Image (cartoon, rainbow, N blue to C red; front, top):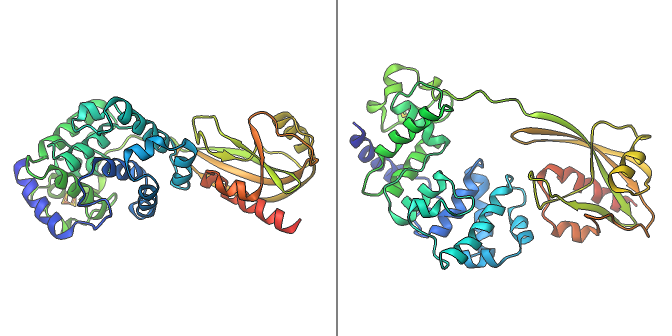
Length: 350
Ligand code: SF4
């Protein structure tokens, strides 16, 4: 039965393929960039970023030669910034270890920073016509329904079984189109929750459709709810400049944020809290609103405060006082965009 799936799906793809800027191009760099951006991110969001990124870094050599700050700036707002850092590191590796040519074999691709099994499969099949699968969340959903896999896909042996089933479906002819067709089917027809089976080209071959339990598949591991963390975000002004810090933590590494004091604090407590955090003596602490940002594993519940230090104050190690124009040129995560607005409002009023 697997052999009957590819012709049906490819015929459907020929009629219904989504028109996307990274389609119809045989360029492993472009596939690598697009597939990296598409991880955990909606297609509509990626389209604009993809175009701007390739305009700025048209080749793997251009990306490898760029400073990391520039790469993060082009990624600003797209989230999951480790993808950008890994892509950049990977580009340098391609230049150093592969003479600037992105390899075609999955095993070689997997040696590149940030290239996991999915991205390696996508590059090998789409750019180099290798008959290998590219298994992401969409494909897991489609294959578990199609082949009736009714065990928790978080269990390694079940995952391996599923990957084996996915690999067996990939045809020797047009493997890249087949993988993209699976992605499109998962995104537009075999969707999470209630799939549109009435529109599906594979309905007659689908185990879950026959059994009537497609909505319940795949069986996913239970997720822990994200941890809620309170922060006091400290907008510390020295004249018209504001204090910022480039993060060194794994999460949002390399991006610029404002000093953040974990916990809930009263206005009276804040000067002592800020002194401990930055060594700076602040005064005139005022509330400046609140904001919330939901990450996959964390929720930041932020209270914003403006405060001042004397103009002669020096930025502590790891921090920098920046003007508004300088701030706008830095890569800043969406999580603190409300704080950026509060900074602009404060400088306009003062
Ligand atoms: Fe998914 Fe329904 Fe198609 Fe089966 S028939 S692959 S459940 S859309």
